Figure: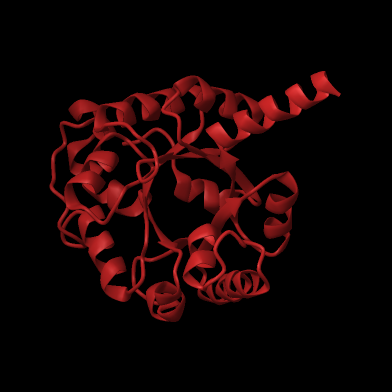
Length: 254
């Protein structure tokens, strides 16, 4: 079974801070762990690498003591299966806009009788069969999370039905895509976008569903945690490195 559980992190801690991994650099991931970040989302939607790189990044996360999640590029049976078999504590599903999307994501992520994920005990998530084969499949179904990324007006309209679906206990809001979908490209701080996220956060909380989103800096991340968001991605490894480079260069040239 995977070494660390995002589900247990959500159950036992508050105001959880992580980051996206977009550079495929395991050293950045390790640095995040050593500074106190609790989780990373290895970004297969916007990152440019293959499945083997996922395994290396997940292995680095385990070694550094930070929880690894994988954002897949789409609702794809093989991609979801490989991410979970590699030992990710869960998968993030982009562009969930309907109950049908959420149902398919759950179907591909869970073993029978809950879903139809291909069953193999000889994978990294089960220590290549060193783990208990009789318990592995049930433990995966219970512990590996499936995060529904709601980032468009279609998902906003179907949100109540999505969070009411059995098996959905964790969502994530994409303010950038939501702003574009609502007709405010580049304006993630537009009042309509903020109001939509606050409304979904309140509705999810009423259903006992955990909520997360992207924070654009420390101040913005703190704001959303204060609004009741359970876990926040404080930028990405590339974004954070860009900011510190920019800040340092500015200080040198002033």
